[in-house]
Length: 204
Image (tube, rainbow, N blue to C red; front, side, top):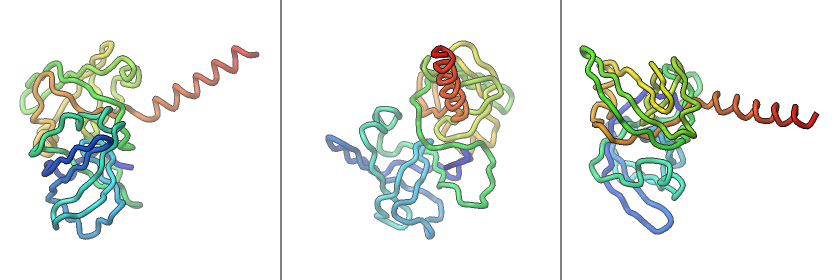
């Protein structure tokens, strides 16, 4: 589990594409002394498992075909900057919201508006995901915990404060770029409960 509070902006150091999977090596400025093989790290919001430590400041992970299909890593490039957050430990502060690291798909940047030192980003999400995005609700974009300012059909807007812009890779986004999106898990649970409740009522 994660909080959506980004701890480092690292970058992809190496990519090795195979037929059934892709291996990536990441470089980070985070202190990795306590990290172990099998630990989880969210990279642009995607929960990845550490498989190797090639050097003191790099670590590796293997991405499955499903992960590649659901994330922007399918067209990742060496040198690409990525947000990183190690998994929560018991007792850690939950500064953002509960983020699982299970990416739902991609959202595309449609508009960027300067508002003083802030920036308002408008995204369009796939219709299948848009129903889980609500005004004043939470959403994770490239692993960053954000509050939804407004929604209109499949479009939604978030406001990025200067701290977020300077501590994540979201400041690098341009129109038509895609980000990994994880919608609020509680919305999906409610939908599932309502589905079975409706089915139960139909059979009575």
